[in-house]
Structures are given as C-alpha cells and as structure tokens.
Amino acid sequence: MDIWQLCEGDKQLKPLALKVWRVVEDQSTSSTRQLVSSLEEHEILEQEIENSKPPIRGDCKGFDYLLFTPSRYPPLAYGSRFGQKTEPSLWYGSCELISALAERAYYRFVFILGSDIRTATDRMYKTAFTVNVDTLKGIDLTQPPFLSYREHISSALSWQFSQPLGSKMRQHSIHAFKYFSARDLDGYNIGVFSCNAFKNKKPIHYKSLVEFSNPQVVEFIDKEKQDKYIFTINDFILDNKFPFPPN
View 1 (cartoon, rainbow, N blue to C red):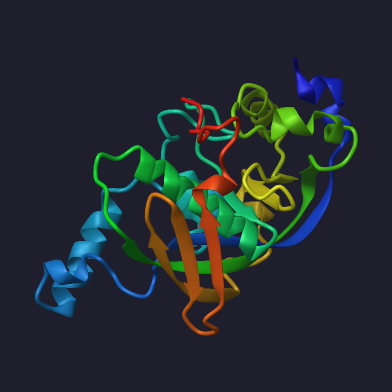
View 2: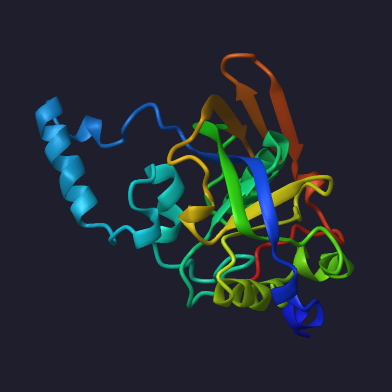
C-alpha cells in the first residue's frame, strides 16, 4: 500500500507554523570537562571531537547543534518511523511538552527492558527546549486524506507503511510534517527533513528536568516549577506486551 500515492501527496502541501518541543540530554554541563585539568585543554578536546564528526549538512549550517545534530549522523540500525536505515536521520519533536516526555519515557523503557542491568532507580538530567517550525513545504498527516490511514502511519507496532511514506516526502522535498503520536494518543509530533523548516536558528526556550526511572515508572520533575510528569510501563502496554521498536 502506497499511502503517498493513495492520498495524492504531491497535492497536499500546506504551510506549517508550530512551536515544537524536544527533550535531550542535559545541556548545562559537558561530560568531557572531567577528562581534562583546564579550560584550555577542554577547548582543545572539544575541537578534536568536533573535527571527528560528520560534516554539517549545507541547509543546516549556521543553526544551533540542537537543531542540526540529528541530521548529521547516519540512521539508526533499524531506521526510525519515517526514516529507513539507508536514509539520513530526521529531527523529531512534539507539539506539547507532555507528548515529548511520553516519547522520551517510552524509549527509556525500551533501554531498560533491553538491558541486563537492573537498578532500583536511575537519575538523569534532561533539557527540554522549544523551537518554531515555519515552512511553506509542509504536510499535515493528521488531516484528510491522510487521516484515513492514521493506524498505519502512527502504528505503535510497525513502521511498514510510515517508512515508505517518509521516503516519498523526502523525495518531494517536504521540509516538515505533522503526525499523530504513537505514545501519547492525544498528542501530535513533528518530523523535520530540512533545517530550512526552522524559523529560528537556535532554541527559544529551555526547561531543566530531572528524570527518575526504573523498570516500572519514568518520572520527570521540572527543576524550576517542581511540576511532575509520571509514566508507567502500563501506559505503553499493547496486547499484554511492551511494543519494542521495529527492527
């Protein structure tokens, strides 16, 4: 089934203008600082690390690393929802913080359940940030005619149909697209193929979070407001089992 062809995707382009959230590792400290004894040595080490990385893609030059990093690296061994394993990676975000945290919690459970190491509770520090997506080359997969294929596009169990759809969007020079989250059923996610979709060259808002996780619960605490966001393993169970990403 070719969803792009069935929906006449090349006729569905529309502007997208959205604030988007993304959650990443804590950005307030550098993990390499402890490896050296001075700031000068740290700058040299950071530059050596930077020189060893793949070059920044042309459309992403001048953008903050939080925006260009995903597209800089080869795809994961099994790809992603809209990226096949032979294609460059995408930048993914969510329209609401809760949806971005749900995605993060799900993949934390993936890591925990796939690891032989079991700890009572693990603590990590995260940074949530927002950026504006504003492009004329957008696709809204949450609206007709794509809405009829929601279960295929946002399946929690399979990327069989979403990956070919992603390839078609990439081939037609789509910059960004909106789709239903598979982890927060009331939420929406955003995928970005090109840095040209970003209105800003760097994030516009940051939020510091503490993440506590164990095999049953992942909890996020806003360090400033002390708001709590809690996800349990049962939030993601389907057909009495945890849905691991396709591979």
